[in-house]
Image (cartoon, rainbow, N blue to C red; front, side, top):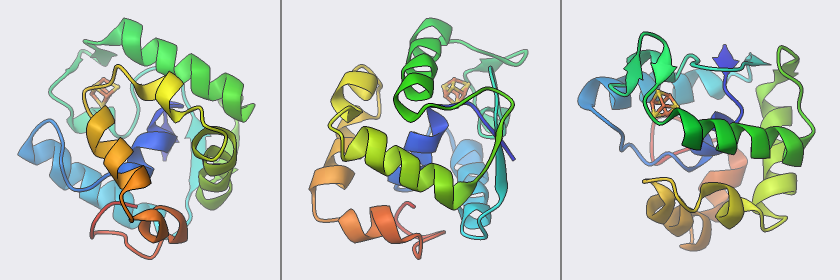
Length: 141
Ligand code: SF4
């Protein structure tokens, strides 16, 4: 599976909402697959999540400036490298430690349209769902 860097945050706070029905169906399948701890390659540009997104035009995100900035911040915060491979559970733990627990979420994600939903997930009593990975296909991952 290939992920652009900031998507290692998005999938952890996913609550079944997205840009379109096709997108959320695709995202449900991604989240289900993540429960099996697949190998993830960090990728520059559109990835396996973007494939079903209505904002993906010819493999380029329509919000390129914003997502590029978020990708760069996640790369820096987590010490990742493009084209490197990681197990999903390791990446998930890394993002938890270096972004969510380190208080970098607001800085990286505050101008994302899903910010309020993710913030509620992070602060609204769903911490178990965020961290234990047993909720694939249900309320986020
Ligand atoms: S908004 Fe952009 S980065 Fe996000 S899934 Fe769609 S194409 Fe990918």
